[in-house]
Image (cartoon, rainbow, N blue to C red):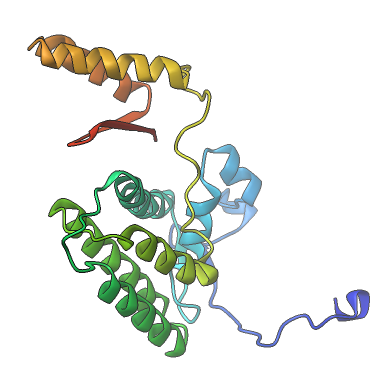
Length: 229
C-alpha cells in the first residue's frame, strides 16, 4: 500500500480476535459465510453493521448473530430517537444549562475509556449515559438556550471516532411505505382534528395506519411530530 501511494498506511497495527458466526467458525461448508453485500441484501443497515463490529473489544472474539445485528440497530435507533426529540424540544430562557456538564463528562469518560486499551464497552456506555441524561432534560423541559447545540456538538466529537452516530435523514419525499411527506402531513392533521372532535376511534385508526406504514408519531406541546422508521 505504501509503495503504491507513497503515503503512510497506518501508525498502529492491532491484531483482533477471531470473528465467529452463531458460536462457530465462519466457513462456506457450514453455510454461515456472509459478505457485506449479503448482509445489505438481507436489509441490514450499514450503520448497524459497523456498530456491531466495533462494539466488542478487539481482544475478544466477536460472535456475529442476526439477533446481535438487530440489537445494534436498536441501540442506534435509541440514539436517533433522542436526536429527533432534541430537534423539537423547547429551550427555556430562565434555566442554567442542563447539558454542559453531561457533555463535558461524556468527552472525559469516552476519552478515558479509549485510552484504557480501547475499552469500547465503557466508551459506548458513556455515550448512552449521555443519551439518558439528555432525554431526562427533555422530559423535564429543563433545556437552556444553546443546550441543543451543546448536545449535538458532543455527539459529533465522539462520532469522529465511532462514525455511526450521524442519523440518516428522517424524512424523505417517498419511501417503501408509499406515502409522500404531504400525505403523511395530511393524515397527521386529520388525526389532530379527530382528537379535537373527540372521535378517538378515527384518531386511533389513523395512528395505526401510520405505524403500519413505518411512521412514528410523537405528541408534544408544540404539536405532533413524525418520522420514518
